[in-house]
Image 1 (cartoon, rainbow, N blue to C red):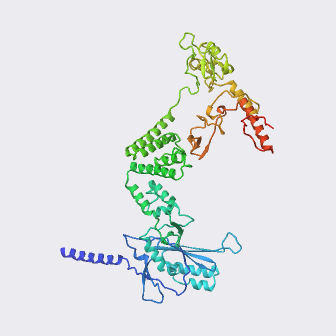
Image 2 (cartoon, rainbow, N blue to C red):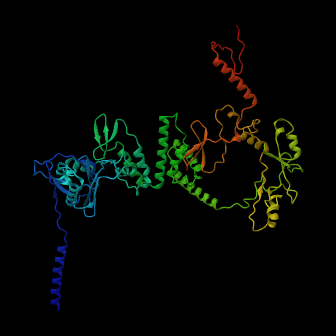
Image 3 (cartoon, rainbow, N blue to C red):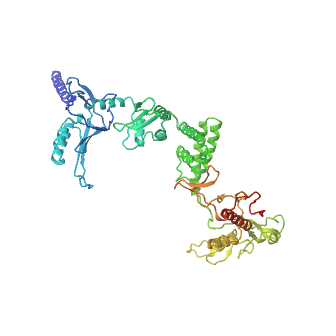
Length: 600
């Protein structure tokens, strides 16, 4: 029995070895590219890149070719690049050849389009052969279709009858040298007018997804200006070349490539706090450099531009989170002070991140809060009684009226005493209306159902309970702050009628300015934020619409007094007469607003 088992095991081993031998992959033979003795006409669009597996080029990407047809024994090794694109001219048109990285080796595609001779949008002939890993089969099929349908000349077909790797420049010493150079020197491809951000990522060997946090490094690299005496141009194969005009040296390597490559590697090794600190230092350094270059046109640090930059650094969305603008403006001031005093501390960055987190939490909680009796009142001083500011320490200190011009609550006696003469004599007060129920408190609300006027307590505690439940009734607010005089002025100004000098004085210093003074507060909403330009003039900016404007309020604008207007008209009349006069300009004693008598 043991002998039988040994025989079975020996038979099994022999069968396994045979099956293993059958499963071994066939040996890959390196092909030899045929060379045709005719001039090269290919145009390389993109060199592509060499496919590497563990630092070596796989066998299926290799071939051999003859650089010189006169020396058939001098075979050179070559590499089929992935992402290669080239074209050859045929009868005023182009045939394009592309490669890409496949599962089992390189894959190929052939494209040809013949435009309509009449100028129509539909081409006369179009050929797009699908990707395949058999270069000979796809090229034989392409030649067959070009001969049958494209109507090419015999010379063009004879020219195309060659090995595609040689015809389109893959088996070309210049292409192979360029591919060897890409393994050592970084290459910036440019398929359009200017390199796109994706191409700059590839230039720095960065991944758009994995290195998304360091996108600012790539953007800074793309925007940096070349130093003297370097210039750039688009070379063969859509590769950006850099030329030194003093030494006539040409290279693929950007003059600042090493700096930004090291910066990117440093960011990858840094902690999130150190990364933020690095970005803030760079922003402040850039601002200082720009200020030294052109101090006349340098905007303040607290401006929409740098608020956006800081918001990007701290991951704040100013469109969805406009409440963060005020905090970011404070951060800019603090960071600037730290930058001048010394280097920023990482702990300060942690404090800022905590503040941003707390601000978001506060805003989230504030949105969930509801104000009780939101429809209740717009009182001057709470829900209770109003008291006179002049006789507040006496027994009879209950206020009877409110003066909109003065902004004070007064009793009748104090109002008559304070407004007996001067400019205050023209003030028009708003008398308080007593509540129809308690007859003591001033009415703050008017019922929309009974039209009665009530104080806040009487309305919500008593009167609101007597209203119909099926009606959603909300009272009207009685606003004692409204000024009848100001409303008449606004109405007359809207109708174009002459008005008296306005009652409100904004700023004595703004009297002789050419522009309207900006208001201290604005009802534009939370999306508009106040900034100051380099002249110190206030303006408002909207981060959602990218708009900026200056919007002074009409009731705060300082109008010209009548005596000033008459003086200005007289001066303009004198200046007009002087401008039209043909007499010599002899004005030794001329003063503004007057013209002295001339002596004969």
